[in-house]
Image (cartoon, rainbow, N blue to C red; front, side):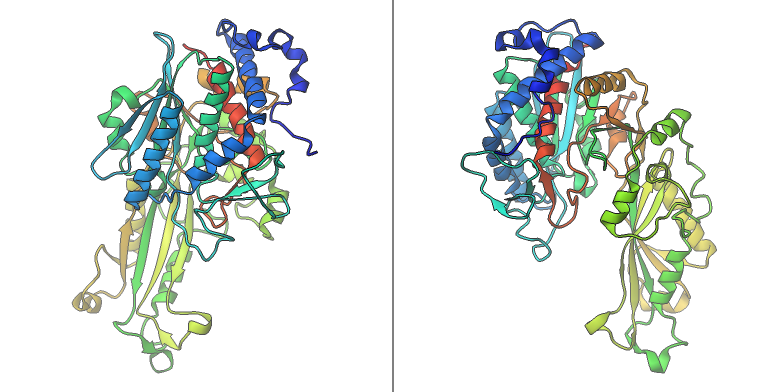
Length: 524
């Protein structure tokens, strides 16, 4: 029989829970919601969730697989509607009051409430139900055909009986980012209902359908529905846990913006023997331009780019210094022989902005190569921002730098006359974006969550900011509402990539964590 590794080993906590050993004790009125009362309630909820989950794992996975089987790219409106309706049904099945908020043709925002005591604070738990676009050729299987595989890669039936190795993984688009978090929340609610445990606060679940498209309508939703979408605090349940495997609390997220850059050559492809060294080569020009934007350590060389950057605080630097060092293991996992950053750690590097060249296209290579000067060369650039940078300041600094280097910036396809009159033409197509955000690591909510996780014998990795981007700044408006990131997915879940997956132990652990938060966070 498989030896089960629970997030909370029930037997290991027996001594701590002598007073909670029977179901009647678990259902007694909760203790006063000071820190001690909150951690006791959190432990009771987590133990109840672990016991309940052991008997319902296959049912949880069956519901999860059904949800993952619905394609969920934000621009695919019919399937996004199917996802929203599936969420409504899943939430209503659990007795929650559900609202499906709409803004023209934007993907719906699905909101559900668990009522709390009169006067209690409202804490919203956020996740997104949309996923990254994908293809079918690069997957070992199909993106929206969920497959459960054991650690040796063998397919495992979801239906049936018997234990499932918790190191098995469920493969499908959005398994880790973010549908796994959604299912873990719903299963936690099921477990607490079975144990007759109710939150001391008003719990709100908020599920977005276009986060992977940059959340272009989220601000409008928040402004149009302040009575629903302005809680007292936010938990953002997006992303992976720390690479060490420890649970993570994130207090910030980098902002983002992007640009598609096109450099022009001749109007038609030309023989590079006849015209090379005379007709400018757009691929050569673009690569020189890109190389001038950052140095070998990844630091921006664009004049003024760092003007708005606010240095990390002493507390943030201390938190980074305390994060476990997993870099040797990551270098082996990624098969890289060197790193950028001139001696910085990975987490130190995340505290500064980044310029990432995420794609290049010019001419052909390999079997498609020809002796031709291409007509144009394109690059796709992703900027990761830190406080107090904004998409607007980044755009201004880049465009000023290009002008200083003799480039004429255009925003539409240039005609022949413009191409003749301008020696160096570059087209910029800017994508949407948003600024970075941070929540104080010393906030009361932070201390409360940290105490709950430590009571569960899970000392969290406390990260001042995550490397990825979520529109956290929107959640903080208009009065600095605290927002803390609480992810559950495994760090190697292939987020945004082919063969995305969720390790079952992370799903089971996530159920326990959400149950502890739902049962342990105070009402005031």
